[in-house]
Image (cartoon, rainbow, N blue to C red; front, side, top):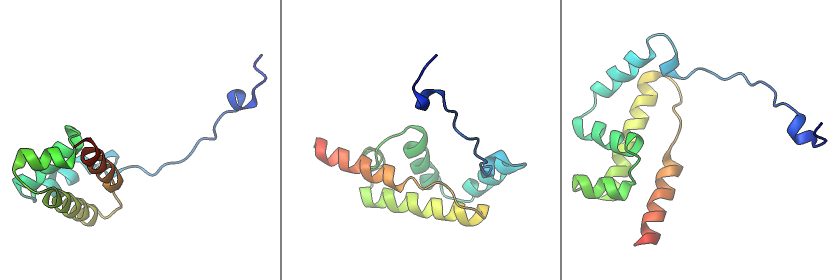
Length: 106
């Protein structure tokens, strides 16, 4: 038997609020909200979140400034939050740390 209480103790179950995509019709609402935005905004979102590129890399790929990429991303998330009526997770810290890493590497 293991004497370490940290290993034997179970974490309490937490109740989480479902994300908009987990609710009925949530995926359709997100898709409709994204469809109302421009192609460049959707491309910035896809490159940052799905391809996991840094803002510097997205800026180079799309011939934009890093600040334009960040503003586009912020505006898109704000619009999604408003249109979905809830708080979406904020990835701004991830973007900031990614930009800092890119500056340090250069």
